[in-house]
Length: 318
Length: 66
Image (cartoon, rainbow over all chains, first blue to last red; front, side):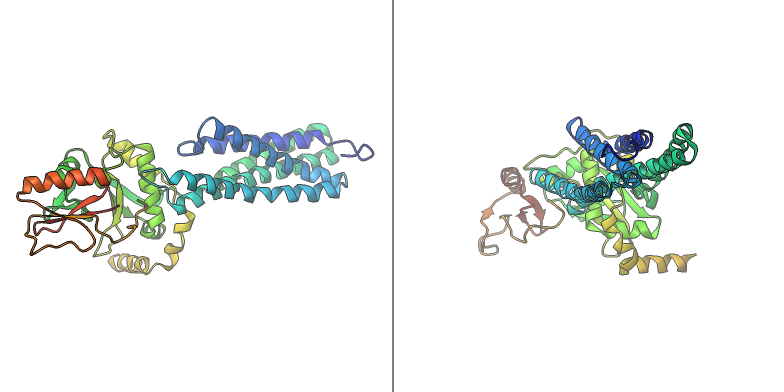
Protein backbone atom coordinates (compact mmCIF):
# COMPACT_ATOMS: atom_id res chain seq x y z
CA UNK A 1 0.00 0.00 0.00
CA UNK A 2 1.16 3.61 -0.46
CA UNK A 3 3.66 5.20 1.89
CA UNK A 4 1.47 8.23 2.68
CA UNK A 5 -1.46 6.28 4.11
CA UNK A 6 -1.83 4.85 7.60
CA UNK A 7 0.71 2.16 8.62
CA UNK A 8 0.11 -1.33 7.28
CA UNK A 9 -2.09 -3.39 9.58
CA UNK A 10 0.22 -6.38 9.86
CA UNK A 11 -1.51 -8.02 12.83
CA UNK A 12 -4.89 -8.37 11.12
CA UNK A 13 -3.40 -9.33 7.76
CA UNK A 14 -1.10 -11.87 9.41
CA UNK A 15 -3.90 -13.38 11.50
CA UNK A 16 -6.20 -13.52 8.47
CA UNK A 17 -3.64 -15.30 6.32
CA UNK A 18 -2.66 -17.64 9.15
CA UNK A 19 -6.20 -18.77 9.95
CA UNK A 20 -7.07 -18.99 6.25
CA UNK A 21 -4.21 -21.36 5.46
CA UNK A 22 -4.79 -23.41 8.60
CA UNK A 23 -8.45 -23.93 7.74
CA UNK A 24 -7.46 -25.19 4.28
CA UNK A 25 -4.96 -27.60 5.81
CA UNK A 26 -7.63 -28.95 8.13
CA UNK A 27 -10.12 -29.39 5.28
CA UNK A 28 -7.44 -30.94 3.06
CA UNK A 29 -6.82 -33.68 5.57
CA UNK A 30 -10.27 -35.06 5.03
CA UNK A 31 -9.88 -34.79 1.27
CA UNK A 32 -6.93 -36.98 0.67
CA UNK A 33 -9.03 -40.11 1.01
CA UNK A 34 -9.81 -39.68 -2.66
CA UNK A 35 -8.24 -36.48 -3.90
CA UNK A 36 -5.88 -34.59 -4.38
CA UNK A 37 -2.86 -36.79 -4.83
CA UNK A 38 0.26 -36.17 -2.78
CA UNK A 39 2.47 -34.20 -3.08
CA UNK A 40 1.75 -32.19 -6.25
CA UNK A 41 -1.94 -31.69 -5.59
CA UNK A 42 -1.26 -30.90 -1.95
CA UNK A 43 1.25 -28.17 -2.76
CA UNK A 44 -1.02 -26.68 -5.41
CA UNK A 45 -4.05 -26.60 -3.12
CA UNK A 46 -2.18 -25.05 -0.19
CA UNK A 47 -0.60 -22.44 -2.47
CA UNK A 48 -3.95 -21.48 -3.92
CA UNK A 49 -5.39 -21.38 -0.41
CA UNK A 50 -2.57 -19.02 0.57
CA UNK A 51 -3.54 -16.66 -2.26
CA UNK A 52 -7.18 -16.85 -1.19
CA UNK A 53 -6.16 -16.07 2.39
CA UNK A 54 -4.06 -13.09 1.27
CA UNK A 55 -6.98 -11.73 -0.71
CA UNK A 56 -9.34 -12.19 2.20
CA UNK A 57 -6.98 -10.83 4.83
CA UNK A 58 -5.94 -7.77 2.86
CA UNK A 59 -9.45 -6.79 1.86
CA UNK A 60 -10.58 -4.94 4.98
CA UNK A 61 -7.20 -3.29 5.81
CA UNK A 62 -7.14 -2.05 2.19
CA UNK A 63 -10.56 -0.46 2.69
CA UNK A 64 -9.47 1.10 5.99
CA UNK A 65 -6.38 2.51 4.31
CA UNK A 66 -8.73 4.02 1.67
CA UNK A 67 -7.01 1.92 -1.01
CA UNK A 68 -10.22 1.37 -2.93
CA UNK A 69 -8.43 0.38 -6.10
CA UNK A 70 -6.62 -2.34 -4.22
CA UNK A 71 -9.86 -3.52 -2.63
CA UNK A 72 -11.71 -3.78 -5.95
CA UNK A 73 -8.74 -5.51 -7.47
CA UNK A 74 -8.88 -8.12 -4.71
CA UNK A 75 -12.53 -8.75 -5.49
CA UNK A 76 -11.55 -9.21 -9.13
CA UNK A 77 -8.88 -11.73 -8.13
CA UNK A 78 -11.51 -13.72 -6.25
CA UNK A 79 -13.35 -14.44 -9.52
CA UNK A 80 -10.33 -16.50 -10.58
CA UNK A 81 -11.40 -19.28 -8.24
CA UNK A 82 -14.32 -20.22 -10.47
CA UNK A 83 -11.68 -20.79 -13.16
CA UNK A 84 -10.06 -23.29 -10.83
CA UNK A 85 -13.17 -25.41 -10.89
CA UNK A 86 -13.02 -25.57 -14.67
CA UNK A 87 -9.39 -26.72 -14.51
CA UNK A 88 -10.32 -29.47 -12.03
CA UNK A 89 -13.17 -30.65 -14.23
CA UNK A 90 -10.94 -30.75 -17.30
CA UNK A 91 -8.25 -32.65 -15.48
CA UNK A 92 -10.55 -35.26 -13.94
CA UNK A 93 -12.47 -35.69 -17.20
CA UNK A 94 -9.23 -36.31 -19.07
CA UNK A 95 -8.26 -39.03 -16.58
CA UNK A 96 -11.65 -40.71 -17.08
CA UNK A 97 -10.67 -41.83 -20.55
CA UNK A 98 -8.33 -44.49 -19.22
CA UNK A 99 -10.03 -45.98 -16.18
CA UNK A 100 -12.03 -49.19 -15.80
CA UNK A 101 -14.47 -47.60 -13.36
CA UNK A 102 -15.23 -43.98 -13.96
CA UNK A 103 -16.09 -41.29 -11.48
CA UNK A 104 -18.85 -40.04 -13.74
CA UNK A 105 -19.64 -36.39 -14.52
CA UNK A 106 -21.70 -35.84 -11.37
CA UNK A 107 -18.88 -36.85 -9.05
CA UNK A 108 -16.33 -34.80 -11.02
CA UNK A 109 -18.49 -31.69 -10.84
CA UNK A 110 -18.99 -32.32 -7.13
CA UNK A 111 -15.27 -32.61 -6.44
CA UNK A 112 -14.42 -29.52 -8.51
CA UNK A 113 -17.18 -27.51 -6.86
CA UNK A 114 -15.94 -28.53 -3.45
CA UNK A 115 -12.42 -27.35 -4.24
CA UNK A 116 -13.77 -24.01 -5.40
CA UNK A 117 -16.00 -23.74 -2.35
CA UNK A 118 -13.11 -24.43 0.00
CA UNK A 119 -11.14 -21.51 -1.35
CA UNK A 120 -14.14 -19.30 -0.64
CA UNK A 121 -14.24 -20.70 2.88
CA UNK A 122 -10.55 -19.83 3.28
CA UNK A 123 -11.25 -16.35 2.00
CA UNK A 124 -14.24 -15.95 4.28
CA UNK A 125 -12.28 -17.03 7.35
CA UNK A 126 -9.47 -14.63 6.42
CA UNK A 127 -11.88 -11.71 5.86
CA UNK A 128 -13.71 -12.23 9.16
CA UNK A 129 -10.49 -12.73 11.14
CA UNK A 130 -8.76 -9.71 9.65
CA UNK A 131 -11.88 -7.59 10.10
CA UNK A 132 -12.18 -8.49 13.78
CA UNK A 133 -8.48 -7.93 14.44
CA UNK A 134 -8.48 -4.68 12.53
CA UNK A 135 -11.52 -3.24 14.32
CA UNK A 136 -10.33 -4.22 17.78
CA UNK A 137 -6.91 -2.73 17.04
CA UNK A 138 -8.50 0.58 16.09
CA UNK A 139 -10.60 0.56 19.26
CA UNK A 140 -8.46 -1.13 21.93
CA UNK A 141 -4.90 -1.51 20.64
CA UNK A 142 -2.46 -4.25 19.67
CA UNK A 143 -3.03 -6.79 22.41
CA UNK A 144 -6.77 -6.90 21.88
CA UNK A 145 -6.23 -7.23 18.16
CA UNK A 146 -4.44 -10.55 18.79
CA UNK A 147 -7.03 -11.78 21.28
CA UNK A 148 -10.19 -10.81 19.41
CA UNK A 149 -8.72 -11.72 16.01
CA UNK A 150 -7.65 -15.12 17.32
CA UNK A 151 -11.02 -15.83 18.93
CA UNK A 152 -13.03 -14.79 15.89
CA UNK A 153 -10.66 -16.78 13.67
CA UNK A 154 -11.27 -19.92 15.72
CA UNK A 155 -15.05 -19.49 15.54
CA UNK A 156 -14.86 -18.88 11.78
CA UNK A 157 -12.77 -22.04 11.39
CA UNK A 158 -15.34 -24.02 13.30
CA UNK A 159 -18.14 -22.73 11.07
CA UNK A 160 -16.08 -23.46 7.95
CA UNK A 161 -15.54 -27.00 9.22
CA UNK A 162 -19.29 -27.44 9.69
CA UNK A 163 -20.27 -26.27 6.20
CA UNK A 164 -17.31 -27.85 4.39
CA UNK A 165 -19.31 -30.60 2.75
CA UNK A 166 -22.68 -32.27 2.73
CA UNK A 167 -23.72 -35.60 4.23
CA UNK A 168 -22.11 -38.94 3.46
CA UNK A 169 -24.00 -41.96 2.19
CA UNK A 170 -23.84 -43.64 5.58
CA UNK A 171 -25.83 -40.74 7.05
CA UNK A 172 -28.78 -41.24 4.70
CA UNK A 173 -28.68 -44.95 3.81
CA UNK A 174 -28.43 -48.26 5.62
CA UNK A 175 -25.45 -50.12 4.18
CA UNK A 176 -25.06 -53.85 4.75
CA UNK A 177 -23.40 -56.90 3.25
CA UNK A 178 -25.82 -59.05 1.27
CA UNK A 179 -25.12 -62.56 -0.05
CA UNK A 180 -24.61 -63.01 -3.77
CA UNK A 181 -26.51 -65.74 -5.60
CA UNK A 182 -27.68 -66.67 -9.09
CA UNK A 183 -31.28 -67.17 -10.07
CA UNK A 184 -32.60 -68.73 -13.30
CA UNK A 185 -29.10 -69.96 -13.96
CA UNK A 186 -27.35 -66.70 -14.71
CA UNK A 187 -29.04 -63.69 -13.08
CA UNK A 188 -26.81 -62.24 -10.38
CA UNK A 189 -28.63 -61.16 -7.22
CA UNK A 190 -27.34 -59.33 -4.16
CA UNK A 191 -29.95 -59.82 -1.46
CA UNK A 192 -33.32 -59.01 -3.07
CA UNK A 193 -31.84 -56.96 -5.92
CA UNK A 194 -31.18 -58.35 -9.39
CA UNK A 195 -27.96 -56.84 -10.73
CA UNK A 196 -27.04 -58.33 -14.10
CA UNK A 197 -26.89 -61.33 -16.36
CA UNK A 198 -23.61 -63.22 -16.18
CA UNK A 199 -23.31 -65.58 -19.12
CA UNK A 200 -19.96 -67.26 -18.54
CA UNK A 201 -20.06 -70.17 -16.05
CA UNK A 202 -16.48 -69.38 -14.97
CA UNK A 203 -17.46 -65.79 -14.18
CA UNK A 204 -20.41 -67.03 -12.11
CA UNK A 205 -18.12 -69.32 -10.16
CA UNK A 206 -15.81 -66.37 -9.52
CA UNK A 207 -18.65 -64.23 -8.18
CA UNK A 208 -19.81 -67.00 -5.86
CA UNK A 209 -16.26 -67.63 -4.66
CA UNK A 210 -14.84 -64.11 -4.22
CA UNK A 211 -17.75 -61.74 -4.72
CA UNK A 212 -19.30 -59.45 -2.14
CA UNK A 213 -22.80 -58.01 -2.34
CA UNK A 214 -23.71 -54.74 -0.69
CA UNK A 215 -27.30 -53.69 -0.08
CA UNK A 216 -28.28 -50.02 0.22
CA UNK A 217 -31.56 -49.18 1.92
CA UNK A 218 -32.50 -45.51 2.11
CA UNK A 219 -33.08 -44.28 5.62
CA UNK A 220 -34.16 -40.73 4.75
CA UNK A 221 -35.86 -39.10 1.75
CA UNK A 222 -32.50 -37.56 0.91
CA UNK A 223 -30.97 -41.01 0.72
CA UNK A 224 -33.83 -42.35 -1.39
CA UNK A 225 -33.47 -39.48 -3.84
CA UNK A 226 -29.70 -39.85 -3.95
CA UNK A 227 -29.48 -43.52 -4.89
CA UNK A 228 -32.07 -43.19 -7.64
CA UNK A 229 -29.50 -40.90 -9.24
CA UNK A 230 -27.22 -42.73 -11.66
CA UNK A 231 -24.36 -40.31 -11.01
CA UNK A 232 -24.57 -41.01 -7.30
CA UNK A 233 -24.47 -44.77 -7.85
CA UNK A 234 -21.48 -44.40 -10.15
CA UNK A 235 -19.75 -42.35 -7.44
CA UNK A 236 -20.35 -45.16 -4.91
CA UNK A 237 -18.98 -47.78 -7.28
CA UNK A 238 -16.00 -45.57 -8.09
CA UNK A 239 -15.22 -45.09 -4.40
CA UNK A 240 -15.35 -48.86 -3.87
CA UNK A 241 -13.06 -49.44 -6.83
CA UNK A 242 -10.67 -46.70 -5.71
CA UNK A 243 -10.49 -47.67 -2.02
CA UNK A 244 -11.11 -51.44 -1.95
CA UNK A 245 -10.05 -52.35 -5.45
CA UNK A 246 -11.62 -54.86 -7.81
CA UNK A 247 -10.27 -58.02 -9.42
CA UNK A 248 -10.78 -56.75 -12.93
CA UNK A 249 -8.87 -55.60 -15.96
CA UNK A 250 -9.36 -54.93 -19.66
CA UNK A 251 -11.01 -58.00 -21.18
CA UNK A 252 -12.86 -58.88 -17.96
CA UNK A 253 -15.86 -56.67 -18.44
CA UNK A 254 -18.24 -58.90 -16.44
CA UNK A 255 -16.13 -58.21 -13.35
CA UNK A 256 -16.53 -54.44 -13.36
CA UNK A 257 -18.46 -53.53 -10.18
CA UNK A 258 -22.00 -52.27 -10.74
CA UNK A 259 -24.77 -50.74 -8.67
CA UNK A 260 -28.39 -51.30 -9.65
CA UNK A 261 -31.81 -50.46 -8.25
CA UNK A 262 -34.27 -53.07 -7.05
CA UNK A 263 -36.47 -53.48 -10.12
CA UNK A 264 -39.12 -54.13 -11.33
CA UNK A 265 -40.66 -53.50 -7.91
CA UNK A 266 -38.81 -50.20 -7.46
CA UNK A 267 -38.61 -50.42 -3.68
CA UNK A 268 -35.88 -47.77 -3.63
CA UNK A 269 -33.24 -50.23 -2.52
CA UNK A 270 -30.02 -50.58 -4.47
CA UNK A 271 -27.30 -53.20 -4.47
CA UNK A 272 -23.69 -53.53 -5.58
CA UNK A 273 -21.68 -56.55 -6.69
CA UNK A 274 -17.94 -56.34 -6.24
CA UNK A 275 -14.98 -58.70 -6.58
CA UNK A 276 -12.78 -57.07 -3.93
CA UNK A 277 -9.01 -57.39 -3.87
CA UNK A 278 -9.21 -58.16 -0.17
CA UNK A 279 -12.47 -59.36 1.31
CA UNK A 280 -12.68 -57.15 4.38
CA UNK A 281 -16.39 -56.45 5.01
CA UNK A 282 -15.74 -53.61 7.47
CA UNK A 283 -13.61 -51.66 5.03
CA UNK A 284 -15.99 -52.33 2.18
CA UNK A 285 -18.94 -51.00 4.17
CA UNK A 286 -16.88 -48.02 5.31
CA UNK A 287 -15.92 -47.16 1.72
CA UNK A 288 -19.59 -47.13 0.72
CA UNK A 289 -20.70 -45.20 3.79
CA UNK A 290 -18.10 -42.50 3.30
CA UNK A 291 -19.07 -41.74 -0.28
CA UNK A 292 -20.27 -38.14 -0.34
CA UNK A 293 -23.93 -37.56 -1.19
CA UNK A 294 -23.61 -35.57 -4.41
CA UNK A 295 -25.19 -32.16 -4.72
CA UNK A 296 -26.35 -33.01 -8.21
CA UNK A 297 -28.28 -35.97 -6.80
CA UNK A 298 -30.30 -33.63 -4.62
CA UNK A 299 -33.01 -32.69 -7.08
CA UNK A 300 -34.41 -36.20 -6.90
CA UNK A 301 -35.03 -35.84 -3.21
CA UNK A 302 -37.71 -33.30 -4.03
CA UNK A 303 -39.03 -34.20 -7.47
CA UNK A 304 -38.56 -37.92 -7.86
CA UNK A 305 -41.92 -39.68 -8.23
CA UNK A 306 -40.25 -42.76 -6.84
CA UNK A 307 -39.42 -40.81 -3.71
CA UNK A 308 -42.99 -39.64 -3.29
CA UNK A 309 -44.06 -43.28 -3.50
CA UNK A 310 -41.38 -44.14 -0.94
CA UNK A 311 -42.62 -41.42 1.41
CA UNK A 312 -46.22 -42.53 1.02
CA UNK A 313 -45.38 -46.13 1.76
CA UNK A 314 -43.54 -45.05 4.89
CA UNK A 315 -46.30 -42.74 6.08
CA UNK A 316 -48.82 -45.49 5.45
CA UNK A 317 -46.78 -48.10 7.27
CA UNK A 318 -46.36 -46.12 10.46
CA UNK B 1 -18.40 -48.35 -18.56
CA UNK B 2 -20.10 -45.29 -17.20
CA UNK B 3 -23.16 -47.34 -16.35
CA UNK B 4 -25.11 -46.65 -19.49
CA UNK B 5 -24.77 -49.07 -22.40
CA UNK B 6 -22.76 -47.46 -25.18
CA UNK B 7 -24.89 -49.07 -27.86
CA UNK B 8 -27.28 -51.92 -28.28
CA UNK B 9 -25.06 -53.71 -30.79
CA UNK B 10 -24.17 -57.39 -30.59
CA UNK B 11 -20.50 -58.22 -31.01
CA UNK B 12 -20.79 -61.90 -31.74
CA UNK B 13 -23.18 -64.83 -31.31
CA UNK B 14 -22.10 -68.24 -30.00
CA UNK B 15 -24.83 -70.81 -30.48
CA UNK B 16 -25.53 -74.50 -30.14
CA UNK B 17 -28.36 -74.15 -32.65
CA UNK B 18 -28.19 -74.88 -36.32
CA UNK B 19 -27.46 -72.30 -39.05
CA UNK B 20 -31.14 -72.64 -40.04
CA UNK B 21 -32.25 -71.42 -36.61
CA UNK B 22 -29.68 -68.69 -35.88
CA UNK B 23 -28.26 -66.44 -38.56
CA UNK B 24 -25.98 -63.44 -38.33
CA UNK B 25 -27.21 -60.03 -39.40
CA UNK B 26 -24.46 -57.60 -38.51
CA UNK B 27 -22.55 -59.83 -36.10
CA UNK B 28 -20.65 -63.05 -36.76
CA UNK B 29 -22.13 -66.35 -35.58
CA UNK B 30 -19.97 -69.11 -34.09
CA UNK B 31 -21.68 -72.50 -34.35
CA UNK B 32 -20.58 -74.93 -31.66
CA UNK B 33 -21.44 -78.56 -30.98
CA UNK B 34 -21.16 -78.89 -27.22
CA UNK B 35 -21.71 -76.72 -24.16
CA UNK B 36 -18.02 -77.11 -23.33
CA UNK B 37 -17.01 -75.77 -26.72
CA UNK B 38 -19.51 -72.94 -26.30
CA UNK B 39 -17.94 -71.91 -22.97
CA UNK B 40 -14.49 -72.13 -24.48
CA UNK B 41 -15.26 -70.03 -27.56
CA UNK B 42 -17.32 -67.47 -25.64
CA UNK B 43 -14.65 -66.99 -23.01
CA UNK B 44 -11.89 -66.54 -25.57
CA UNK B 45 -13.99 -64.05 -27.52
CA UNK B 46 -14.83 -62.21 -24.33
CA UNK B 47 -11.24 -61.93 -23.19
CA UNK B 48 -10.05 -60.89 -26.66
CA UNK B 49 -12.71 -58.32 -27.40
CA UNK B 50 -13.62 -57.17 -23.89
CA UNK B 51 -17.29 -57.88 -24.59
CA UNK B 52 -19.53 -59.37 -21.89
CA UNK B 53 -21.18 -62.75 -22.38
CA UNK B 54 -24.94 -63.00 -21.94
CA UNK B 55 -27.00 -66.17 -21.98
CA UNK B 56 -30.36 -66.26 -23.77
CA UNK B 57 -31.03 -69.66 -22.13
CA UNK B 58 -31.99 -71.25 -25.45
CA UNK B 59 -28.52 -72.46 -26.37
CA UNK B 60 -27.48 -69.05 -27.71
CA UNK B 61 -24.98 -66.74 -26.09
CA UNK B 62 -24.44 -63.12 -27.06
CA UNK B 63 -21.31 -61.03 -26.71
CA UNK B 64 -22.24 -57.44 -25.98
CA UNK B 65 -19.61 -54.68 -25.93
CA UNK B 66 -19.48 -52.91 -22.56
